[in-house]
Length: 206
Image (cartoon, rainbow, N blue to C red):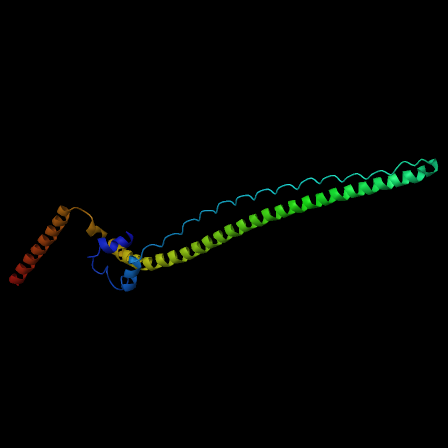
């Protein structure tokens, strides 16, 4: 029956005894059931960061002006050495230019990757904090509900125990229809009346 027994059986003798229906029990039964905290809605996934604009391809370096071809064949060896040195210098400069371009592109990609990682970490931190808050709210709700149920059960169980013991001891009195109960009362009263008459006559005879 729960807490309804105090309303449905409130006129039963002893049911509203202050032993288990005092001020504390009244306040406990009047207190509303704690509300379970709602499960939080997950934060929306972060909008991906825009991809960085690719760096412009470096402009090729101007080629060096070749040295004049010597008229004297004896100077041809020096001419070849000068032309080869010019080619090596140009090749090294071009290689250095594209190496710098490669490093700049890698740095740009690393920076973008770090930004994405930071964005993901921030989102994960927010979700973890949200989960921790919900877990803490559920723990508080569990403690509050346990205290609420304990305070109610103290009054309800005692009252139910009183009704249960009464029914266990006198359950036959609660069975049968109104006519059968009146018939039992009439039979008992008739039997008592007959006994009174019998004992009265025996007394008069003595």
